[in-house]
Length: 117
Length: 117
Image (cartoon, rainbow over all chains, first blue to last red; front, side):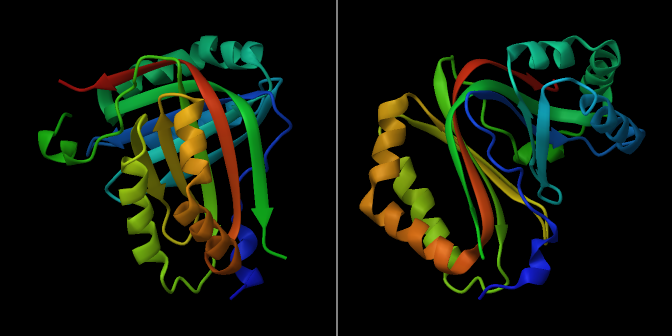
């Protein structure tokens, strides 16, 4: 049954295609010193990129994390990829925080959403 | 620090582009009767699709779930989309299990992975 009190979390709505998704799937190491601060800073930074459309994140406790970033076009993604502070964070992530990760960059051809009314 | 015991969970490795991703972001309702059985059946079914390359899933407790399916080409995705049992499960999902969801279907242009050694 529907329960409106559950609607405080919601996925990012589908923008009008075409747009880009960056799908980042991760397994983290045990030592996460400094991760929270850096992650919060990256979330602030990416929101400043013109053409950034939003972000979804899910984390299975002790398991896989998935972050999906949505961008208007390849230029917006390139600006984020080349951001100096972001690059430094990526380097630290490989050295300290990530056991493994995969990044998939893709152009969205179609999308749709559903919301219970 | 590295800890090999954490490596039992791993993201799907990046296939050689181009390939397709189906990014499915969900918020579920409180009543999940029957969801587990149907979800397990769908996971078995999708693995039978020629061109299915793998799946990543993460679920924040009480929050967002993200499932990413990887497919070799648009034909593989179409076969999954049109599967009769899958369509029936989608219909039941809208009626019972999902508060809201978004589906993004996208063609991967580049990807890379990292694994701690």
